[in-house]
Length: 217
Image 1 (cartoon, one colour):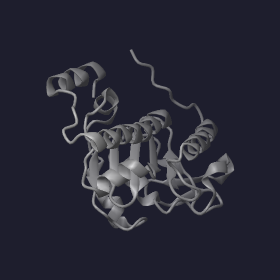
Image 2 (image 1 turned 120 degrees about the horizontal axis):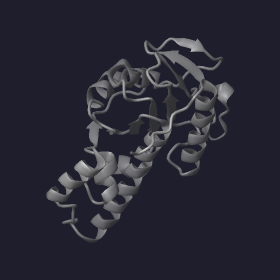
Image 3 (image 1 turned 180 degrees about the vertical axis):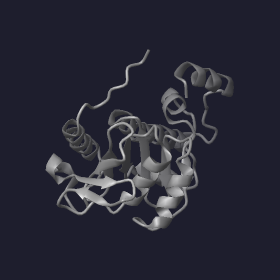
């Protein structure tokens, strides 16, 4: 049976949020001031989220803000991410989710702008991503965006926000990080293939069914 890694304390959780942010910043999936991460202990009614307007590459645990599922600040000195409403909406709807990552994947976002959906071009796309839904444009930080994300996140591991970026969710930070990284890897492979041929070979549907059974997706 696959082992699921969980955090034993909030301090460990906060440390891992900062480490995850630094890794994604170094990969170019989160920019100096763009992108945000949140996480909670399993089944908790509050979560820790990265602050707004602070350089993302050097966040420390004391910079994080603790927020309730209603979006109210419980602990912390900085202003929570402007995207706190959609993080809260995801946690309210998905008891299985304990980590949410919003990153600015350039190639994934570019494909969405061109009207190109992420397809099962690699085993990772089939086994990790499931179907990637695209959320229509809504202004960042608004209740409208939070509502749309809440509606689209049902049954999904990954979302693309039109003109904005992507969201990856997981039962822990490692899973959510794997989602946003896999999204960009698959989008890159698909984009490169599309430069040379129009009919990109996809994983056959019968093999997709086998993958779903083997990986439980």
